[in-house]
Image (tube, rainbow, N blue to C red; front, side, top):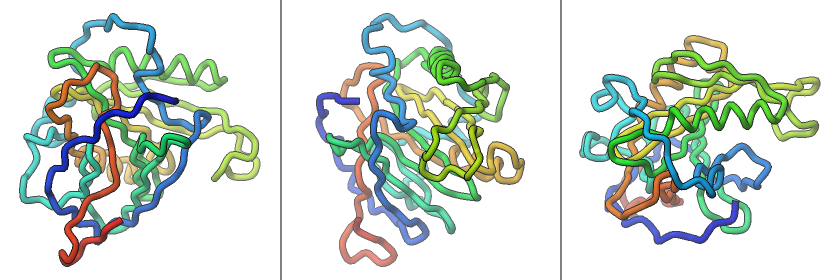
Length: 248
């Protein structure tokens, strides 16, 4: 997934309270399941004009745009997204091998995982209607199966994906794993989530992970960006000496 590095996003100047969040970084390679929407269809310049796909109450209940978020609520500032700290939440930054670019945020919570990626999108049209077809096609080419269902955020893909022998975290004898692919079109951004673990089968865990996805705040910024570009992510910022904060 080699790409030219982009200018760093402007610092927001907010202190990130991370007392309830553990953080680590994980390197990812081209074989790992982090999809860069730019590279998935780099040669395709014409976007299919589609309506936005989002819950009717997105602007009130999330995922929120930075302009819609509570300005006094504590967040972990990761650049393109902000995360609300909570007890038991383990946060991972997934870093591209070679470039060391942060390409995704991994959230471990309620015996489940939620991977989020924010992308630039057109102002008046959405990306999810087209993107989920590409995701389903990629999974089928890998030998997996998919089904499109109506979920809490609108259309989502529920998939059973083959596991390569020796994959990290694989249970002995397990050959496939379940995953949910969700997406929300916001104002000039698209937020993709990949859900795995208990939240794929247990309604109580699913509700907790869905609320976590709802709580994500997307920081699009004012810099012009082509649709499908990954909105830059970075390590969390904190002010030295602030109580209850950690500098990573």
